[in-house]
Length: 77
Length: 162
Image (cartoon, rainbow over all chains, first blue to last red; front, side):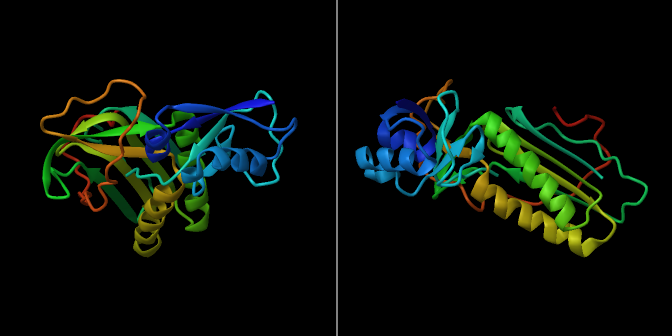
């Protein structure tokens, strides 16, 4: 299945666009999505995956309707 | 116990102070956009916010800090978009029964926010045009240390922007 991952901040700048699509096996875990992302863009390896606006654990299952975002180093405040 | 967490478009307006009956410590931290970034003059900071998650994480953080430190009230506002030099982009208001836990909670809240709340900022230099929408955000610096602590004032009649 193909999943869309939103990018922000340094990750968005690095990849050059605000989201990317990655191909993963059906019913993937969060760690599978991260692995697929980092295979294509190794510079993303330090970022965390968020699923539906919360940081995901590696074994969390991803559904087709879930909203995925890659959260790197933040700088609010 | 009460809490609120909000994302606001642009700079935060001055706040009106309202203190609860059991409050013995009322602490306000305001983050102010500093006019220099790595020694270069800037016009503003532009905040990129992943809004649904930022709101959720701020709310979660406020709940945790409220319980962990036994506070009476937490309110937090953070700007999105462009905030000019000298303007307020972040405000944390903590009410507690006593001074020590209230002051400690401010530092801990900000530490965790800078780790877990998806907000990014980039300097807008004097000769640059701020971008209007999401796009390559060109984060050049986090502007750390650009904050100052301001005392709450009861003179202002304006409410914080919601």
